[in-house]
Image 1 (tube, helix red, strand yellow):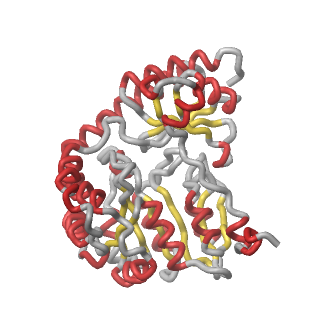
Image 2 (cartoon, rainbow, N blue to C red):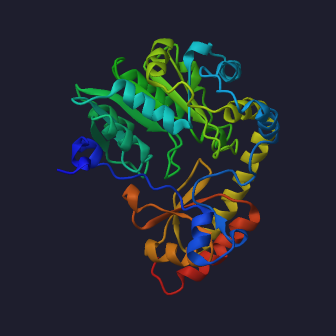
Image 3 (spheres, one colour):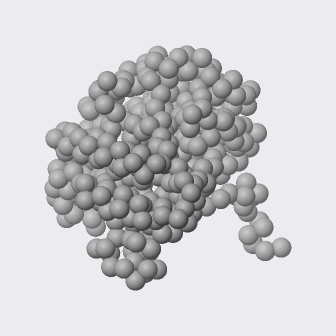
Length: 369
């Protein structure tokens, strides 16, 4: 028996998470220079990092010989003031992925189950299975969450439910009252994770105050990230807002230095940069309008999106993706999400959006859509 056979079956059966192709990898494969490549695969902010975050990070460089604050106290105080919650309601993570896994490690084990939607974030089933628990995948409704069906799917052994709002990779959105009705329906001993990685892209007409629900729903865990609108994907920092007793349990399994010093400093600066957030949201709204119109002109079906990306049906998606890569444009194939005919494109700068549409138009010639 090989050593790999000694790993538990639930680990051996996991499919590896495949991120968007890096620019450096495509440059090596294609012979193109990095400057010739446009990456619209991973929902990063095309404006880069918040300037205030960058300055705060640069000021923290002198302390890199020391371990970071294992409790991230200053960051927790800044996050607490930003949301109006006590420090003991906050759990920090190496990106919100880390926080999602902390929930799974804390509340799931063999003999338990967790509920998630079809066509939702790929990390959910990975985290569930890695914890030894059973996945209950609920069929999507119009490529989004069917909350009524998800509530019905909660089993006696269910300990966690994952909801992404807006959803990645489809961009679907659930109105706030609908989500709170779901919370009221689910038993209070089932943790409901509300993954709000893209919530800052919501227009004001759709925004809702999930943080105010924490007092009424002690089983609610809200996760946020600095990777998207704040432009800090490379620094890896996120956090959860939850009941103090839930936060205490999660902190027992959290690694003490899971958020590095630069990330902690930059996150504090980013939360203060309201101008950058507003500008990023505006660029996204304008770019989404242009991209959606361009995709429809090409005769493609496009899913409505409340995030910073669009999903479109390309028919021969694999061939279209290869053609785009050959032309130096990186988007995200969605076969691993059970959507083999679909591609996801991040909203970029106007020049990047134009480059993508031109490359896509050329790639579509000779292919059915």
